[in-house]
Image (cartoon, rainbow, N blue to C red):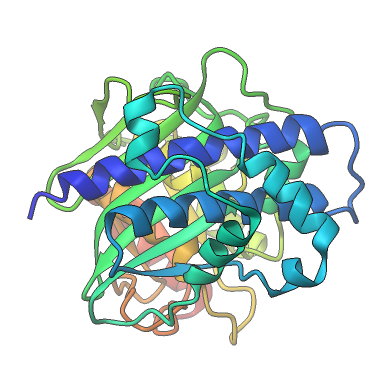
Length: 353
C-alpha cells in the first residue's frame, strides 16, 4: 500500500492541531502561567486531540486510536470544557478543501468530548491503530521551548506513517542545533516544520502551514566521519533520561561538546534532518515503560532518513505490545554507520556487556 491518503490526512490533521496549540500558547500561556498552572497544556492537549481524532474518524472510521487523554474530567469541569470548545470551534485550515477533508468544524461541545473519548484503544499487534500525542513536551510547550504534535499509523504492530508538527523548530533543515533551542523560542517567521515519513518511502520536511500542504523535500541523517564531533541530543527533564549515563557515554565516544537539551519528539525530527546526530533516552527507573505515542512517529522518521533506532539491548522498538513499549528499555537513535559504536558505548556504561 502507498498510504498516500493516510499521509495526507495525518499531515493536515497535525497542521490544523498545531494552529490550536500556537493559539493556546499565545492566549493562555505566555506570560501568564506559573510552574503549577497546567491549564494551558490541558486546553491544548484536549483540543488538539479532539481535532485530530475527528479527522481520523472522518476518513478511516474503523481505525482505532491510542490517545493520551479522555474526557471524563472535562464532563466534570464544565468551565474548562467550555474554554476548550471556545477555541476548538474557531480552528480551521485556510484552504477550504483541506479543512473539509478533515471534517470541517466540530458540530458541538458534546461532539468534541465524544471525539476525545475515541482515543481509548488498548493498542496491540492487530489491525490499524493510530498513536497520538497532541502535545508532546509539556514543559517545553509552557516555557516556549520545543514541543511536537505527534501522529503515527501502526498496522499489525508495524509503523507505516509518521508525522511530527514542531511549531518552534526552524524551517531550514541546515540550521544546526544550539544550546538555546530548548527554551524561549517563538513561532515567528522561519519557524515551524512538519516532518513526515511513510515506511519504505523516505522522510520529508516542509514548512508548517495554516493552509494546504506546502512543498516537501527529502531529509537524511548526515554522515558523521568523526564521532567525536557528533551533536548529542537529550531531554531537558532529568526524570526522562539518565543524564549521568549520557555524559559517561559521550566521554567514551570522545564527544566534548555539551549535549543539546530539548523536549519532545522534536529531537527525532532534528537528527533525522541532520541538525543533530544522536539521541539517547536512557532508563531512570527499572519499572518505567515508555508510551508508544512518545516514540512511534519519530522512530519511523529517523529510520526512513537513514538512521537506526533501538533500545539499549539493541532491539527494535516494539509497538505491538499495547499502549507502552513494555518489551523495550530506553532508546538509542543514531545514523546507521555509527549506531553500533554508540550502542556499544551505551551497553558498556550501563553494564549490559
